[in-house]
Length: 298
Image 1 (cartoon, one colour):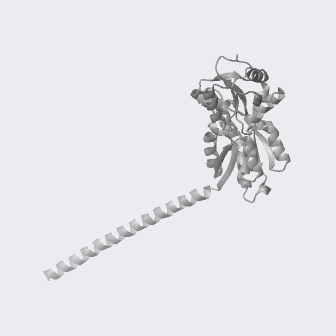
Image 2 (cartoon, rainbow, N blue to C red; image 1 turned 45 degrees about the vertical axis):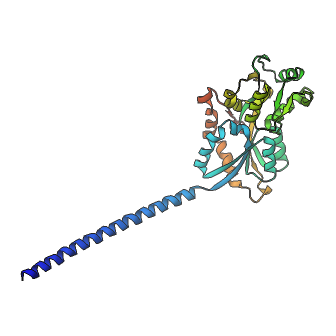
Image 3 (cartoon, helix red, strand yellow; image 1 turned 180 degrees about the horizontal axis):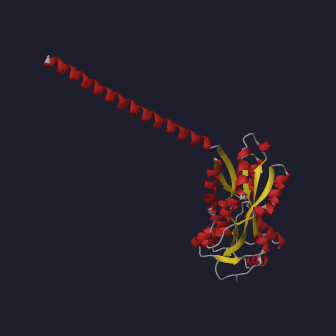
């Protein structure tokens, strides 16, 4: 009888232990399933928040100055579009738009941009921002002034070395317009060099050659610590440098991301982004590298 009672007690105890183990396993499975579902939901939310990519053809000045590195993460965060940036001269960027190889352009050669629109390659041009061009070169050889044409004539008459972008960029276009106003063929100067490079590389070449060059102010400020050059001419009205944004005509290619291009335009013209543009450079250089200009569209 005693052995029977002991057996019954053992069976009850074993059943209790097995039940507890079973409940524990069920709880762990439930937690695991719940965690899996939550992770899955988070992954799905992350995927749906990303819309895809847009191709931005822009100038080397926006890239070399660091502006795009500052701005584009905000665009992706707010819109879901990631950006493939192709930084070239304005002329090359416009050609990419003409060939349907970009969705949206951020460039700075207003006359060329307007011709691009008139030819049907783009939808509409909007003012985004502006800064200015500066003539930089060896310190002390030309007195600092605010007359670009006088500075260019002095460089030519002295046969000083001058490094040109030579790449159909907005900066190159501005340089050529100044020579044209003076009725000077710059290549008649034996020390005139066509670099065929972006702005940052052109500045470093000018430093190496002890030469003068024309630069947008933003890239100059971002690069000047690498050189011994200085500004010799600035604040001439004809040195103002306006940037525009243009959505490429979606009829140029079935691959054009018209929705993404319009989202980019809406974003870069928004008050929040215009403020980011105005603040850019102030902390590091003590001045803004670009002046917001979207208000000019109103």
